[in-house]
Length: 181
Length: 353
Image 1 (tube, rainbow over the protein chains, first blue to last red):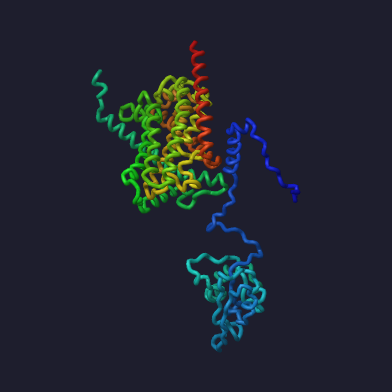
Image 2: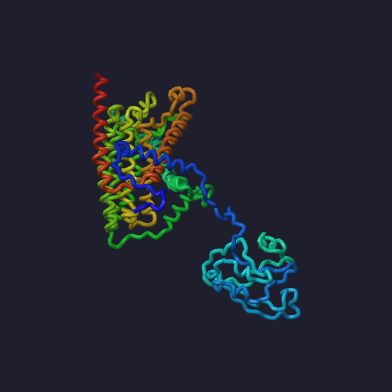
């Protein structure tokens, strides 16, 4: 058969020379290789203390955003759920009451908002679909869990901390990924 | 003069008891930390870090492992021979520990006005004693493998026995050549000769090579770990074992490794002799206790190098096939050892006229 590339190497099937048959020199060579590896820098990342740097376009866990007054931005339009190729998002809309104006930015809000993290493929289409900048993908990933049910993230799990009452937590959760707040 | 032989005083007994306790404790601790070192070396050679979570640098890992072994359920299979099943690990451990009795760990020290030899028993047939005990080591494997009443274990036991017998021959013959050079069977005398002159390695490089390869085979270490070849025999002769009985087998292996490192250092690399230093001068300038400490440190430095070497080889060389093992043993090692013996004998005769 003709070679597809010129990188392939034919297997050497010549009988072993006396030097190779003596076995020990070859072992010494091998031990040299392992010794070299012994002193090599290790690529291990000791996880909880060190984390792997993510690329700037990394798409991680979803976050439901709030505006600068701490009101939820989501208006439960359902565009994200439609855009989602894995059908991971479900939501239920509700109408904002008069006394709830400090909680929700728009007149309609998501009473229930769930993302099944086992279905989610972290494609980021929900973020692109959202007209209100209410959802974006953060720099963390879904932590492991013991139960399948625990992977269905409710609104409480997804919402970013309130920038008015918990500014530090908000800043930490925001990272440098959110578009203008 | 007749009573001298029976002059076992109380002080003598206490002295030996303390020495035995120390030697056993040290061998156990070294065996324990060999498991840690093994995993660390394996990790480093494979570009990993090895255990590093339990304590600083993973130093508490052996304790955690030991605790795990103690806590596990002790299973004795129904179809096994219960007595032999329990005897197996005991024999393996016993023979592993007994060998250390004749090894000189250093020169004399002086405590409480007594001059104490850092050696449990300086018997004049030291090497023969070691061979006797080491060859008992195969019983641990044989009994364990047989009593398990499991085909794989039995196969492993058979392999272990035939391997040990094959390599003990070559080992014995390499030692005979060494004995021709030293003219003594006492390990103490051998070390003292090396302190005064050159190390035996320079007289017997081929003998050392054969001895080392056979020591690998005797300890069931890779590339000769056929009795416990996980990919062929599941877990070999300790497949049916659990809890601390398994721990005993694993421990005995590491103690064996420690003892054979000690033997290699003692027989071929000067034992407790400190290289490039005249020990007699040191004795007069530093006093006996400090000298003995330094000598023991020198011996342990050599031992640790050999233990590292054992691990280094283990993580470099793949396991032999069974026919290759036998081929190397009978058609490689034994003729080499014979040739070495004959050449040494001829040389000794020529030198003595």
